[in-house]
Picture 1: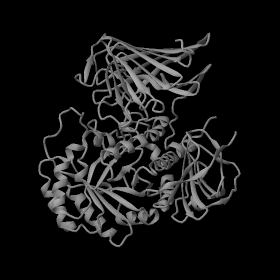
Picture 2 (picture 1 turned 90 degrees about the vertical axis):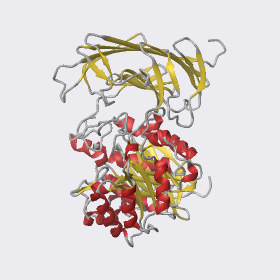
Picture 3 (picture 1 turned 45 degrees about the vertical axis):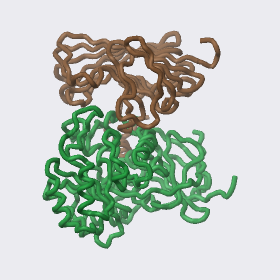
Picture 4 (picture 1 turned 180 degrees about the vertical axis):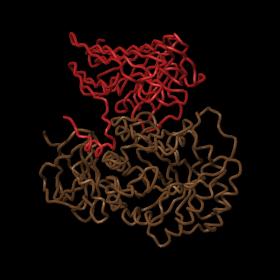
Length: 245
Length: 394
C-alpha cells in the first residue's frame, strides 16, 4: 500500500521512505532482507539472528551511506541466493567516484546461512572498521551458555552476560555456539579477520554485536588501492532435541 | 484482522516521576517557556547548564526566578571546566546560596567526560567526576548530589561512581548511536530493562533517574561532532531527528515509560526547545500531547498487561477504585487491531488527527468517545488513551 507524503510525515517526520523490507519464508525459517542485510532470522518462531550485513565506517566512526548498484534474489530448491552490490558514497548523491566497492553474497536454506563479503578498494580507503557485522538477539541469548572458539583452536566456555559488560565480553572469535532454546543450537563460524563481541546494550541496541578487527588495533587504518578484503560468516542451526546429532 | 486481546492488570508499583529537559543554551524566551510549562505541567525539569559559558549562567538565573512558586522540581545537570572548575562553582554558589533553595539535586560533569573512553583507554588526567562531588558537597552540604553522566549508559558503565558518595544515579540513552532505521530505533526499547537493571546494580538503593532522553543525540561522545542532518533523514547521532516531530517519537516515548515503570524512580523525556523539542512556534508535535497527559499519572498505582506484547506498548495507572487510565502505542508501521478488557471510553492520536490542532485549548487525547470493548484500530505509531473498568476477579 502506498502512503502519501503527508501521512509519512505525520508518522515519521520525513517524506523519505525506507528501503523495502522483503519478508522471506523457507519452511520453518523466516527472515527479512533489506538493503543487503539479513534481519530477524527465526527458526520455528525463535529468533536466532537479529541481523547480519556489511558496515563501512569512516575515519571518525561515522557510518558510510551505501549506494546500491545491484540487489538480486534467486530461489531454487528450498534455498535463496542474494547478491548485493554497492559502493561507498563520498558525496551526497553518490554520483562521484567511489573509493570502495562491496559485494555481499548470502545463501540461505532450511539449515544454514552463508554470507560472504568482498571489498575492493579503487583508491586507498581510510576507515575505522569495514566488514561484516553480526547481531545476536537478546531473548534466549542473555545469560545463556556460549562456547567461543579462538583462532588458535582453543575453546572458551562462558556465558552471555546478564549485567551489561562495559568492555567486550569475548575476544578473538573464530567460532561461537549457543542454544537460544534447549531444543536448538546455533553455530557461527567466521573467516577473513579477527572478530570480537561488544555488548551493544550499552548504547540501548537490542543486540550483542560481533564485528571484525579488534578495537585494540590502531584506527583508523587504510585499505590500500587495489586491495581486496574478503570475509565470511556461516550460521547453522541444529535441532538438539534428539540424542543423536 | 483478528484483534489482539489485551488484559490490563495492576502492578505492585507506581508510575515514576515524569519530567522534561531544558538546555540553558537553547532555552526559549520566557513567555514561550512559561506557556509550554503551563500546558505540559511536568513534575520536574532537568536543566543542562555549561558553567564555562556566561550566557548559560545568566539563563540559569532567569529560569530560577521563573520557577519560583511553581510546583515543578528543578534538577541541575552542570558541565564544569576540566582544569579550573572552582570559578564556575563559586559563581553558582553566589546564585544558589548554601541552601540551594528551589533545586532538587545536581549532577556535575567535567567537560572532558562528555567524551567516551574505552575501559582500558587513555582517561583524562584533569578533574574527575568524583572530585566534583566532594567540591559540591562543600558548597551545598544539604543538596542531593548525583553520580553518573548526562550522556549515555555506556559512559556510566565505564566510569562508575562510588555509590556511598552519591545521593542519586543518573544517565540518558539515545537510540540512534549505531543504527537509525525505524525498526532498529523502536527495538532499542527491548534493551532498556537490561540497562535499568545493570545501572541499579552499580548503585543499589540509590535514587535512579533517567535524564533527558529522546530519539536524537544532543552530543556525540564517540566522535568529533553530531550529525547536522538539515535534510531530516534517518541518520545516526543527530540532534535533529525527523521522528521527534512525528507520531513515532510519541509512540517510542510511551514504550519507554512502559519499560521504566517499576524499574526507575524518575524519567525525563524530550525537552522544551532544542535539542528534543516537543513543539515549534507554529505547531505542537504529537509527543507534546502524550507527555502532557502522561504527566498526570506520576506517582499513581501503575498498570501493565497480562500477556507479552511485541508490537505494542501498554501502560496505565489506577485513577480511583475500579477505574484506570490505560495507554497503548503501536510500535510498528503496520496497522493493528486490539480489544482491551474493561474499556469504556477511548481517544486516539494518529495520522488522521488534525495536524493543525495546535491551539492550546484543543487536545485530541482529551476527547474520549464511548467505545466499550469494541475493537480498536491502531494505525502505524498511533497512540490510544482509554478509560477502563477493572475486573474484580477472573
